Image (cartoon, rainbow, N blue to C red):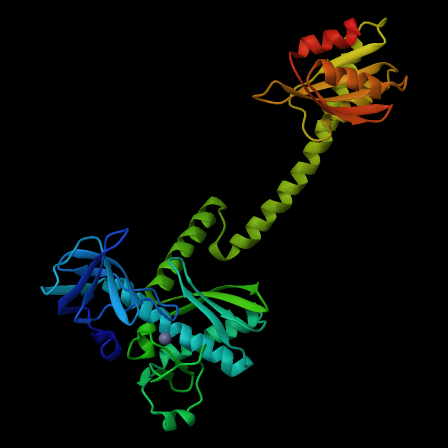
Length: 387
Ligand SMILES: [Zn+2]
């Protein structure tokens, strides 16, 4: 089986003969007499396309054979016309070549190795066995794009064993047999089975996206070519939208967002003070309405957030009464409760409340808090009247 992609990575249509077709769990796997479909390997995904109109959704190499994963069977011995999904493949060629340049530059500058490479649907990731800062990587990005502007040829070398001894190259693993080297003069030389464009200019653009700690080094994510441009377009649009929303110039968006954060923090702080004041006024109103003779007081105040129930209970307890504050939670029959008893029987009272109204919670003899369930008025009646 002839691997057309090794000699001619630009071949996107070809004729071949079907040599095998095997049914699989999902569709079929098809072998051809010759193929330009690159099988998944070295971090590059398998090619997609069509064989006589049948969709090829992946290409894999197994036991020395290249298998085209199709959704329809193809007749063994038949002559077929095959087409690659060229946008997908070309994007992978750009990405693969971009990865070589970035890894090569990192190796040259810092001596670190690429120990993992993945071309995903979102981005390309490179795992490096050493630590790099975002600033260091931005410098790498500038140099990598210089390689594109210099439009250097990307060479494929097939050296014999003796020639190989004289060529320094990067490799992730020991290779048996013929070593295939991809060389970008001045930037990188690396053992690779993948497909690459003929010159660096075809990569168009290399954009590093992020760096994060990974194992004992870092994981760098990047995009190349049309995908980098699409990413730029999308991010630019987002920034433009934000600039309109904030009525700020694009270059001032970050400042405007940070101002909003500050303002939001201040408003939250002020709201807390107002909430506290409101609770205090509520407490005064509740005490005014409460009949003087009872030494027990239950207040139902729904929707109190955070320490609200506790603060209201503290305010009410200044009256010297035994106080229960219930605060219902929207959409449930559950109340948060706080119970304060100057007679130091809060714990026992809380237990009785928990038993009567499926509650849970605890505290001290002065104060207990928790949750309980039921009709608020019934709980109030139980607390103030039934005892
Ligand atoms: Zn490669």
